[in-house]
Length: 251
Image (cartoon, rainbow, N blue to C red; front, side, top):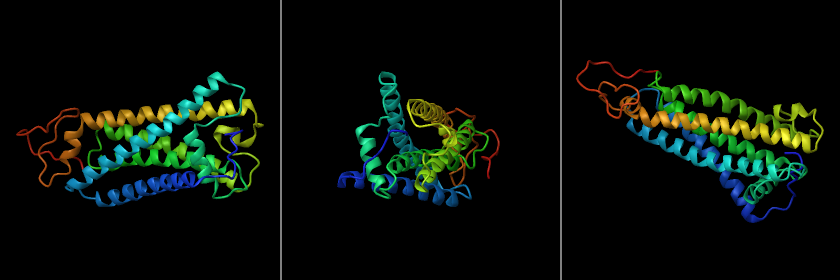
């Protein structure tokens, strides 16, 4: 954000944290791609379990990401005219990422938020993987909504990051009026609340997808059995039995 100039100095802990966070994002996307490929056909119980693990890790990542935006909004409420602020752990990670190219003082902060958003997006993508054979569920509808919204948000952060890295005077994206707004309290305020609202909305959609996943787990899990019973109605805890031979929807 404007005013967040992460200096070139970064401790070993800062760099280690940045590397681990990047590896977290890479591992999640490798898992999502691998699970999507393995899930081409129903009946693989381990895919259901592994997808649920990726979703859970995505929840943990987004809780950390969201609290950073909440803390920034809280700081702004008390100091609306001050330069934009980050939590100490956020600043440390930004310094670590900033070592990629120290000639651009805000690059580390941009990379940090880009990585955080792609961890969030991976969690939502895992919702789509786990419901691949349960397309009529509310879980999939909320997951699809989240992937679209967070995908657009991820592209916004990609634009912000690349524009800074390629030498633009200021980050270019929807949250900066494509670089047309002059640095200062006005730009900081607009960008801060733009991303805060986007993350709150995205988190709500993710929460609804997880809520419906819990309610519809019997229907969704049924597609991962070698000999699935008749699926239960959405929201039921156990699959219905003895009411015909309808099988879960397939891709």
